[in-house]
Length: 134
Image 1 (cartoon, helix red, strand yellow):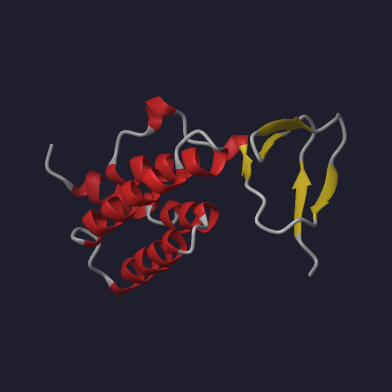
Image 2 (cartoon, helix red, strand yellow):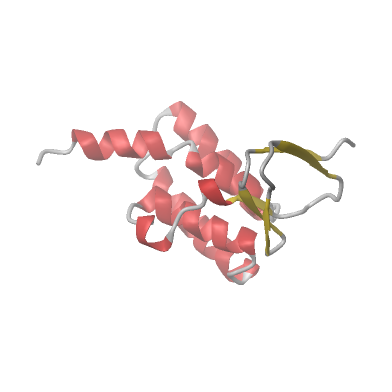
């Protein structure tokens, strides 16, 4: 298994198993060989004040589990409830597949994959909110 390969921009920060790591002044590439490591690029992180919509709140819960800032069992339960609620709104085929993948990843205790799938719903959610009458 080749592991996870991260290409980092100068001074980019990542969170690996709860430790913040900052790259130096040059671009670099690192390989993470250990399986099931929790990795989050901090440029992709959702800040608490940004978690204002149903999808972003679900992403934030997955992120908290990933970073080790939430109890995994409690967080998974909250995520499953959030995914079920989102499935009542996102009824198109593609969104349903993303939600099914997110749900399966949640049950498999893989918060990174949950976060990846749910983030794909953010643009769709934004379009739904933009279409609401003002």
